[in-house]
Structure formats: C-alpha cells, structure tokens
Image (cartoon, one colour):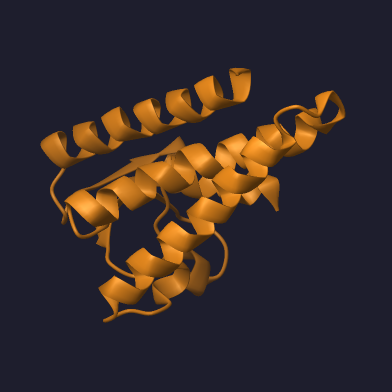
Amino acid sequence: MIYIFMTAIIFAVEYFVKKHMDKVRTLQEQRPLVGGKVILKKYYNTAAAGNFLKGHPTWVRYLHGSALAFVFAGLLYLMPDKQAAPAKTGLSFLAGGGLSNLHDRLVKGHVVDYVSFGFGPKRFQKLVFNMADFLCLQVW
C-alpha cells in the first residue's frame, strides 16, 4: 500500500509544481539558479523525450498511456512480494511521474517542463525537464 501512496504523493507534488509554474512564469522567462548551472523556465512539450514523435500528439498519448499501463501492471503484480521493495519503489517513481505527465497530455495537450541546465554539451542544455523526468531517470 505504501507504494500506491508514494505514487499518489509524487503525482500530487508534481501537479502543484506544474500548476505554480504555469501561474507565475511565462514561456519566455528564465530564472538562473546556482550560478546559472540550473535554470527555471517553463516549456510546453507536445512530443516525447528529445522531441520524439513531434507533430504526432495522438501517438505520444497512446504510447505514453500504454507504457504507463505496463508500469502499473508490474507494480500491482509485485505488490505481494516483500523481497521486491527496490523494484516496487522504482515502479512507483515511474507511475507517479508518468501519471503526472499523462495527466498533462490529456488535460492540457502538452507536458509542462521547467528545469534545464546551463552546463554540458549545447544539445543537453537545450533539454527541459520536470520532476517526473528525473524520477524516471532514477529507475534507469
């Protein structure tokens, strides 16, 4: 049960952070933090990671929803297994973050991203993330 609660907390926190970013930031505004290493900026992403399937929002929604269904199925399957705590934690991260992003896609037509980095290769600096993205990276 704690893993479903963890999923819900992740969804709720991300929901309110995105709502705050939508309310207080414009799409053009950038706020450097940590000496410019971290940059807060609002970005509306209609594609998957790295602009995969850009211009095909319906495909992105179906792909996202299908992947999320497998994540939840895996989580529910592992629930009774007391030895699977690391896997259930990872799946909870994926489920909470994935649910938040899918909610955005279905309700708004885009995902709200809000963090980028001012270091590393230029290609990396162009990417914009949200908390859900970081949670998914933790699993990999």
